[in-house]
Image (tube, helix red, strand yellow):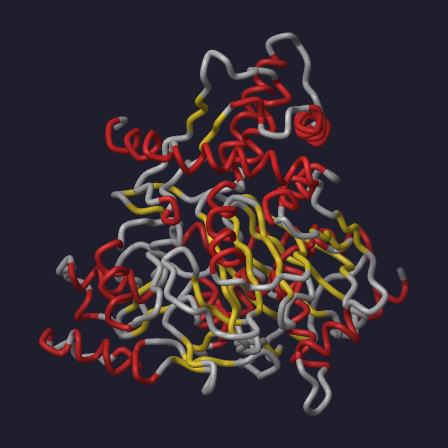
Length: 532
């Protein structure tokens, strides 16, 4: 305790904060990268006027509440406050659209990654660039606004992501880490910044609009892991800490997206390594040895925090519907006067899945709370389907929902491994899906068909990952790569649990996913017919 207290008092601790879909989390680490305190704040997006969004008030209230919770944890553990820090890093959900005018005013409410409203723009840009542009990407949101003739477009002075916005307000710097930037606009692996030819193509595409801006002028500057991204201003310090205790002048690392911090937190930046983040949404990241043979709308091409090419399979849905079912079971138990602990409830229900038939006994589920691009589902309609011959047991029901949480991810990953022949030596897992020991890991290994490892630190997630990237900025030696830093300074000697895929699970998942793909027309029709 005395060592940690001295690190905090001397201003050597490093802070990482990540804005996830349902929780904002802060992690404070020591000079050995070990978490020594944490804080969090729950929040949730809302569907307003056809867009999934968080308000600016949500963002700043949530950030201050999260930081205040961290400070309370520090005081309770060590009896001191936080006056100075070695470095800070901010991370958030990738993609989306935040557009500002020349006065720094938000022009339209924040449009998050969850919105599937940019189909025509994404399709047109993919054709123009000959490079997959998913609907989530910032450039797709911008071009869709242009196609829609939205009045705010001529007023744009700057567009960025959520992490880029927070960093800008903290430092005054309009920058973005290359991993997060790669979800805004395509990155050239050679220059490790926006692809110059594609910038020119976009400018030509909108030239007739006579906008007072050019695309390269309104995007944030791209920075690589390890670079100094600015310092905390007095204004930024007050936005973070209302008490005035935290001082200005602290160095910040490049703001990153949750994909990049997931790679850092799982030591997955080397070629042929991969990680999977599974929570409200899910995505698999695989660092590529060579370029893909063709364009796949199901596969994003992004980068590691130091600019290496990565194939990403991203799904909008993972555990939301599963969580809703667990919540309903909790409500049913309450009718009988039973109030189970949340961990015990999840553990028991998830554990039942291990008693089920490997193919869920013929049950089929779709956990699409929102639209799912990979499956060509425009709007989510969670559903469970069965025939009279299906074995409708609790065990089969739970496994079908665990499988469903990974269904779209499995479809995308099969393209990467079976069609493109991408080799994945091991997948590192993190996120809420793995919180219950063994179960989520076993289901994921069945879906991926490859060993899945969960590190001891997996629960710290992206907040710890961005703290590692901030520590790398401070502690790297001349020429030391991020891969070497993570392997030799952070993860050397670290432990985790590895699970090989069981053949019966793999075969059962294959039968399930066959039905999942064959019956997707039912889900698609439901989104068309079932309206509020």
